[in-house]
Image (cartoon, rainbow, N blue to C red; front, top):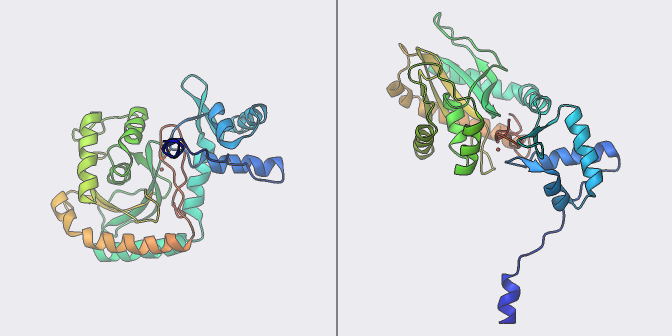
Length: 294
């Protein structure tokens, strides 16, 4: 019985030490740890996780909050990622050295499909366009890299959210402004959850005039070694040229492009994540809770 008791006792993990020879590098190490969080975190939680003295961690969090890299949420005891930190991560993804390779894949996809295509990631409650190439068709909707669209009614947003745990999705959706943009926009959290279940099952997502009237978008995930990918490739066109039914016929081309982008991301090292309504994970090294925090 004594042996059984020992087996059932919780295994105590060693604290995650904040590495670094200088205060600046230890701050950076703390940010790296925070980037792994999929939910809001507290000072006491970080003290227990890192073994760092409470006054030291409190001072470090104050510095990061004062510089806009972190923000306080809820009752002021919880922290989440700040806008400045999220914007920096997004700019890195848009301008990284693999941008040219991604752009070439996107260009080939546009030539094959004849419609505008984009590579996207989720940041907070928005989808960010990391890259985009417009169709040569005179009737088109123009969006530049860096543009943002709502996560709850965009194909890429639904595709990425569908991978999250129910708790993460609930937290993110609860924090997002579920604005109605068209008469097809779904704003009921329960109906959104049902839609995300279908997306997860089918492996693709469709925006059927849910964000902009007359615009249809189809998105698939870019596979990563991580359990969750924060990168999508999508095609977008006016409904007169692209209906949801026609979009299904484009899935093989989108999936081929996603596989090519996956190889590029793998070459750039471990994918990072960003998603939540109170935290930031990092984003695949070309782009989840930020993805799961706001």
